[in-house]
Image (cartoon, rainbow, N blue to C red; front, side):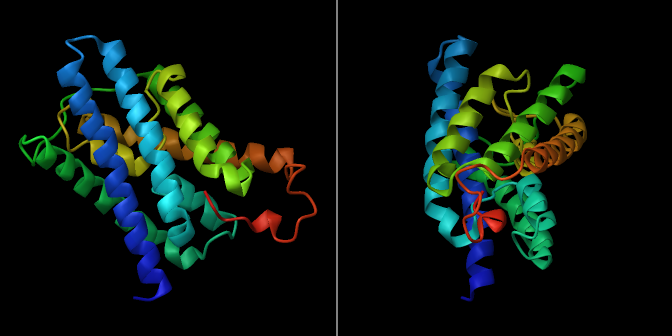
Length: 230
C-alpha cells in the first residue's frame, strides 16, 4: 500500500475508533450512572480524552490524525497537506464515523442501524460549536509537536463541560452520531446547523492563529510554519 493509501486507511480507522469510543462510552456510562447525567457525562468525557490521546499518538505519524473534516480543510488551506487529498480525507472520515457508530452498537448488542431522536438546536448550541471548533483548531495549530496529542485531548475534555453542545467540534463526528439513538446521538435535523457552526469556528480559529503569528517556540525553526501534525 502506498503512502496515500496508508494515510486514508489511518484516517478511516482513527475516525471509526474515535466514534466507537465516544458512542460506546456513552452507552456504558448511561447504563451504569443510574440516571445521573453528570456522572454519565464525566465518564464519557474521561473515555474520550484517553481515547483521543491514544489515537492521535498512534495515527498521527501516518496521516496527521485529523479525524475531522474541519481540521483537514484548514490544513489544506494552509498548504500543510496536498489539496488533492482533502476530498478523499473527508470521504473516509465520514465513512469511518458511521462505521464507528455501528461498531459501538455491535459491541453493546443493540440494533446496528438506527437514527438519533435527540434534538440539539438553538443559538447557544451553535455558538458553542463555533467556539469549540475554533479553540480546537487554535490548539492544533499552536501546540508544540510533541504535545499535540495531550493538548488536543485535554482541550476536548474541557470543552465537553464548558460548551453547551458538549463539544462535537467535528463535522464527521456530528454525522456519525446521527446514526445512534443513544447518549451521544444527535437528530438528523440538527446536524446541518452544527456543521455550519463548526466550519465557521474552524475559520475563526485559523484566523486567530494567523493574527497571533508563530508561537515563540516555533519562530525561526526551519519548517515551523508548515508543521502539519494536528
